[in-house]
Amino acid sequence: MWKKIQSQLDKKNKSVYWLSKQSGINLQTLYSMKRNKNSNPSFSNIEKISEALEVNLDFFRSN
Image (tube, rainbow, N blue to C red; front, side, top):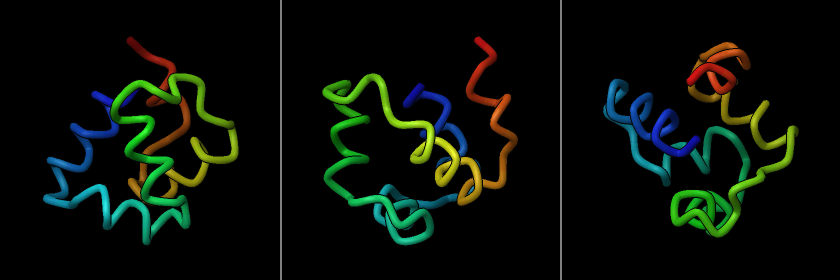
């Protein structure tokens, strides 16, 4: 999942720090996701990320 998040961040030329501020998700939580320590994030966090990145939730379902 993080590869999809990172690709959107790259397209928008934004950082993980920006995503944290936009989504309201703790920076450490995002870094845990990035390092695969939190490979099963909550639905609430996925919603916040999709809103911040301006993508549909289905974006995270596709391979």
